Image (tube, each protein chain N blue to C red):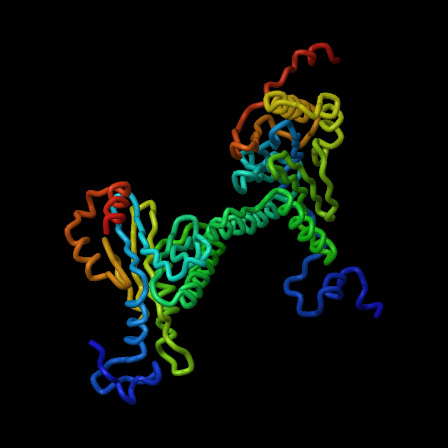
Length: 238
Length: 196
């Protein structure tokens, strides 16, 4: 019994001896940094920069980390980019399957959030996580929806969501400016301002980003947009 | 037109003395009793039209739908036994999805048609199963242009500019031969299809 539970055989002990390639808690390789999202009166807005970091190397500078799923749903992903691409393929096939059935039922943000929570929680419970934090957002029954799921399967819903360093740097700023009757223009400005502060402060951030907006009229991703940084105070700092 | 294949028509694994597989021919008969379905391929797309046979006023609107989406870029019209056809639709969707998972893109229609035709043909080889009692018309708009194929219960398929299956297929085909497909766009074809 003790040899079964020695740390390096944990995953096979849980999954059985025919569990395929050995996968333990991984280290992420190419990673994306924070995703920010805010709910406004009539929809949701997302921001995510276009950098795929390779450790401390700013390696891939044109990675799109926002994904449109259908006219009412979108996700943004932080963490291992390969795990995001894997989820992207699976979710895109789910969306194609919806389209083929042609019964006016499509993946909604709430159901996608629930599905992702189950998938990520179950993977982590087998000690084989998808090293990603996903923000799911869109229009659900006419109102904006925003949900968070991380690699542990922790999930919650909130009008303001930011992952990683964004949760520490951008969330306080966004909470100060948020009102329940926020307009789309104000929400977009909030995301733009937060992306600028993230670029100043997050050492793994980048000045180009995508902006995603979901409203009752549909879902669109704009970009790459550029952060307009203001370094004028730099001369005052010794 | 019906001939009796006494004794040689009990299973798909038997040839008749004059070289016919009667089970497959009987399957083709099953389609001739279904509502007409036509496909027209123009210069910028493919148009399908189906005759709606209302066998009962008690049906909900949208019952017995014979047009299916296989993927984002492929549509399928069917004629014959609907239950058999739904199996083919599911198989086609899986093939398309597998292709996308492996090759990362939209499946080319001729590749999908070849795979689906092979699947349909397999059911004509064994006495343990019966052939599919339906024909399917597949259409797609691809980067190289629109394409359309029809597969019949024997597993044979051809590419078509215009094709028809079902009750009024002869009449529909006669009408189609008058059309100059390569010059027509899908809006014009929709009107022609409605007329037929």
